[in-house]
Length: 336
Image 1 (spheres, one colour):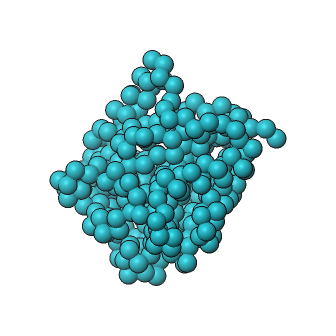
Image 2 (image 1 turned 180 degrees about the vertical axis):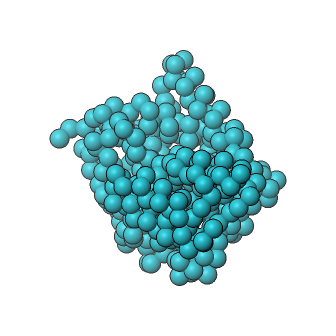
Image 3 (image 1 turned 90 degrees about the vertical axis):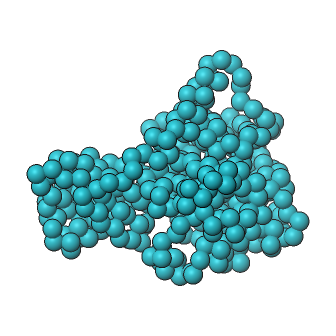
């Protein structure tokens, strides 16, 4: 089957611009189209859609040293990006969303560089038992993407300096630090650069899709496209999107499940939940985001909140129901 393919590699290292372009592509990809978008950021921490920035990143230190905090559309955890890190996004029409095929493209590229790599779990790629790539997903009604990172020669000291990873998460991964869990591919193949990895990824994509598309250095520069991306840039660079409201709750609970950590903050009025905020590194960003409305207006009672969460998830897919039952059991154990 022939596909309409595009390959885009931006020279921008501004995370807010690069994420704006990514969402622009997601909004405008054709149903029969698959796009490979390659990009890099400089000195950036990117947090997942539902994460608490103050918990995940030493934000003051990052920004005092010229770094940027960015928040992406997808779920998952916080990551550090610099020029030794290569980012990619596969964007397609909803019917062409195929994570296994895309993982295959990445693994083929890495193996073509002489490095033995494999998929680990739902969204990680490893070499020699250590992670060099993490991936996340955003699925909409008509389109979807999978994006991720390749650690080539990232400054792991900066990664450890800026990221704040909970002890519970480290214990769940069976490691003592972020650095001990990950590996730069240049450690396994000395002299390897991010450019080398990008070229290998482009060639692997072309082989898989039979693509003859040229690499586009920029998007179309028509006025409509430029204005749309600039509007998205304003969102991604804004305090409201990156930080949101400073957490100030009456009651807060947190825990970690096999599918991710959860922190729920409740603002109460007359024993009712006037507001709930849910922070999580769970991959299902849409479900986590929906929980706030599910709990809003309920009595602050563990049994009633638990029942409401389960009821709201009954028509959802299996993984959502599993998350709902986990959350309900945990809340009931709090006995409030």
